Image 1 (cartoon, rainbow, N blue to C red):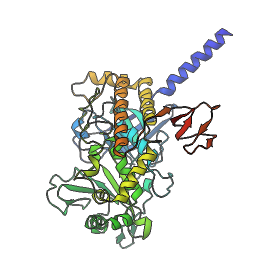
Image 2: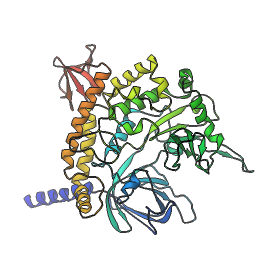
Image 3: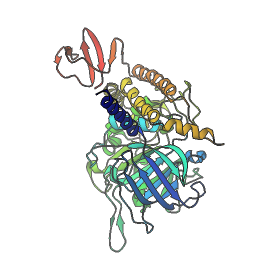
Image 4: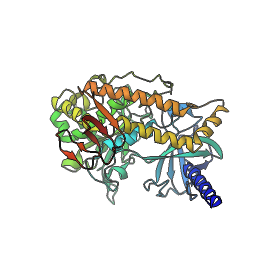
Length: 473
């Protein structure tokens, strides 16, 4: 009996170790990501944690302006394509079926999770104002993988989907047989590395896929990428012409979405996303009337959240606090149309309302801490963190990392506790006397703040044994 028990325990132990492993992605191509501006044709092979393997033709290109400075561990785009260019949709690591993917190297992020955790928080906090086949998700999702490039180990990456037409449910261009077309759904990406000289307004790239609309204020046309021109860019010009008109903003944007985006930037301290880069605005159909023509904000590239910096320079308890919570609503370089919104009492009240709701759920310290801890445990227990760190120690040029991931995460949790308190102070919320609970004993009695018995408490603040408690399900 003891022998059988020991055997079962041994099997369980092996199973747990196997399940903790990360998927392995091997990519191969001829040429150098660092040297080529074009996509390089090759192949990908993904071995998932259950042993299943997906082998597909693909092409690859490096991505990211700052990321290219860390070419020893390149971030890159991966498009699943036949040699003749035919798209291949595939579900990778249980993520949505897609033909275009991002391999985020996280080379400037010493904990390799700022972007992922911040997007998880955003996806929980803010939803699209309309339904799609993916529910109402307005941000990326991703899975950690270990990457080999041309049979050379490169360590931990995050495989993520993209902000694109399919995710946001945008209308394709209507193309006629004679070649004329009508642009409908659009996505503009704020910021670009394609135009080196951004000193001149109304400067287009040769293919009209990039526009400097004002001095040092550039945009890329993400959708539709093959139909650049004034037909596609016209609505963006219109936004700039009317940015000082709050009634126009309310008619052409969703105020809830704008307020959620700003609260997110404030709470996460993402200075790199409050100005002329690292965000998207999209509209489902610029030819339609009403809500389908309204614009939605979506964040992007959240590596400087949680006190991070653009070169991995902040760590070991010292973090970037360049933008205080109170700085963000007043900074002169805030993106359109936030300058107009922040002068309005209606919008200020909406910001406070969003924080009051968010602090109980997506932004709650316990909720954020648990997300950080879950990724910490995955990276450590899989052995991938040690393997990656050990490899990069042997290289002449290295990305940013820390040996003691658990210690660094604890420092970042403390950073966030302080940021949470700073948010409360800014919005005039007194959290004194509220105790945080991660679980509630089921046999106790709980009351809401109006004194009514609550039989099945979920997220929120309750009265328990004469004290206020903040509970996260």
